[in-house]
Length: 165
Image (cartoon, rainbow, N blue to C red):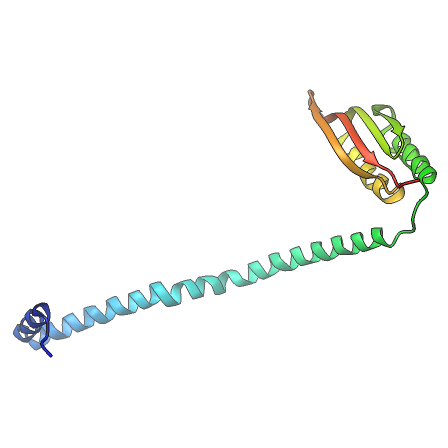
C-alpha cells in the first residue's frame, strides 16, 4: 500500500528534525492533546458536577411545590358535592366578606358574574381561592383591566360556573 504524498513529506520533514526539536514537537502535541481532552471531555463534566447540587435543590423545591398542588387538587376532588343553592349562598357571603363594595354579583342559572370596580388584587386572589374551595365555583371567563392609580386595583368582570342544580 502506497502512503499519500503529504505523509511522505511530513515523514521527510520529521527525519530532518534534531532529537531536541522532535521532543519539543511531541511535548507541544501532548499539551495540545491534553488541552483538547480537557476542553471536550473533562471541562463540561466538571461544570455539570459543580452545578448539580444547585439544580438538585431547585428540583427538590419544584417537587415540593408539585406535591403541594397535588395534595390541594386531591383535597378539592374529595370534597363532598355541594348543592347549587348552598354554593350560591357561600359565594354571596364570600363576596360581601372579601370584596365588599368593590364587587357586585349577579347570577343567571349556573353562571355567576362578578363585576369589579377598584378591587384590591390580594383580596381578589383570596376571594377566588375561597370561592373555589367553599362554593365550588370555577372561573370560566375573566375580563380584567388594571385601573389607573398608584395602588394596583382591578376593574372588569369574572364569570364563574357554579355546581349544577
